[in-house]
Length: 117
Length: 114
Image 1 (cartoon, helix red, strand yellow):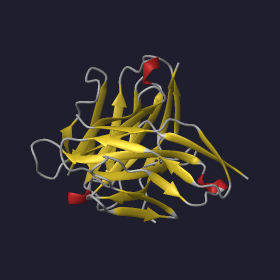
Image 2 (image 1 turned 60 degrees about the vertical axis):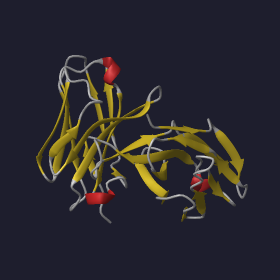
Image 3 (image 1 turned 30 degrees about the vertical axis):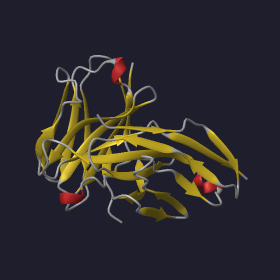
């Protein structure tokens, strides 16, 4: 079955530091890949996505590149801010149920990021 | 700014009581998902609806959980009877058409069963 493995946290950084959160996946098909972010007390928000190999998703200074050869989708940001403190989830979406347009998301365990001023 | 809404945001109840959680998906979305989040298991998919019909509820304990969509603007998740192991945050998410892999999450219901 499908699975997502992301680096365990917590990750603690100083403001303006470089961020990398590693994510690798296992999938039988050709999944789309996502990063979601969860701020304290809130639901998950879609941060960025990539739907095919070599696509780069980007949003709010974060980016991740879909690497089929290494089955990876690492999240990066050049200069983190205190407001980026949150839990980050890597996820993949793949078709199920014999084709059609039914998708399911498989999530990683989440990585807690804390950014100190 | 369209959002998924969930009620209640917090619920504390005693073991054996019935719990009903409600979700209003984003207007125009035709796919609804229910997830449960715990520290131990992370995010688990409980149920998946398209156009109000259940597509998959294999992740849901059938003996005590039930999920329905009485109409396009309301999804419900019911637990009867509740048990302490049901304590978790329950999220509803919605999506649309062929892009329902892109899901929009509500703020969640934090359930505590004592």
